[in-house]
Length: 142
Length: 142
DNA sequence: ATTAATGCAAAATCTTTGCACTTTC
DNA sequence: GAAAGTGCAAAGATTTTGCATTAAT
Image (cartoon, rainbow over all chains, first blue to last red; front, side, top):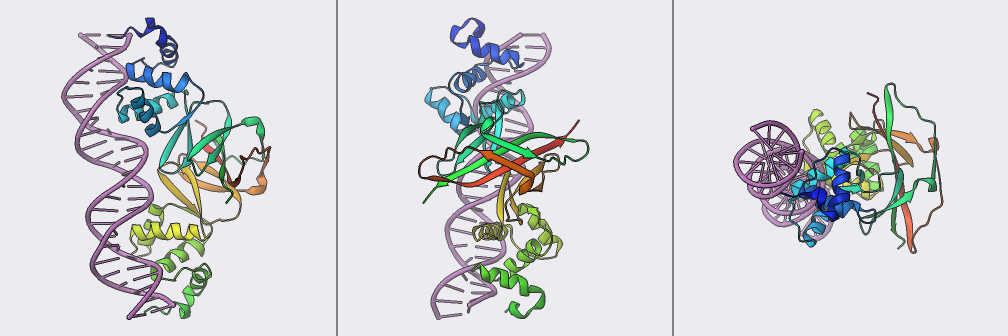
């Protein structure tokens, strides 16, 4: 049994998970520490799985997929779609946009105030904007 | 042997394909007619395959994937990424943006002049913007 | 104890590939 | 006839699911 509440290095992660109603399990805590206690980052399930292995942890890929989606559902992560066939998750949950560096397959944030969108929205009846994605693809000049 | 050049209903499609250097084969002609001789549309390989079957044509899914990518490579289609796990192709190749109707999984065009983007681009050295995607997700108000 | 989460392997999706056969030029 | 394109089935890649086991409350 893990008394995580009293394990100093996990205190923050435990609290974060409890706040959103997720049980602080060993796996979720490890992932939370990796994701939320460093600088913001963009990960795919595979990237995160690799990081987990590098840290000598053992978390199945299925659990990583599950956790990423749970974190997203409770608002701890945002999903970013840039590439069909690969799902990225972003630890920066504030409103912002993205550069997508095509050659490297890497994302970078663009602060929301760097882009000014003026639109005349024709939202269909009974619908609403759920989010606005701006993705600026960057490629080699060549 | 199909003398497509002299088959009236295919004349336009034959010309279109020749212009971009693609041989006007039976399959490519059928797809070109479906895609380019009606109103603009957004299709996935699967959607197109279904349309082909409804028209009592027989084109393998692999050939549809190949053709969609060939058409994209020569600039007859644009790829739109809105959903990881499903690739949409757009027959509207002019600059524009998209609504994505989440419930229906359907795309709608937004004319480029409805959205005004002002940005201060910090393009990294030796790189350039290759495209700017704006996708406005629309969901049920609920 | 009860309830939830995990791990695994299997299945589901979507997409690409290899190669023999066919069609176009 | 040479070169290119097609179809099929098989392989790839990513993601999801079912269920027995394990852990958290």
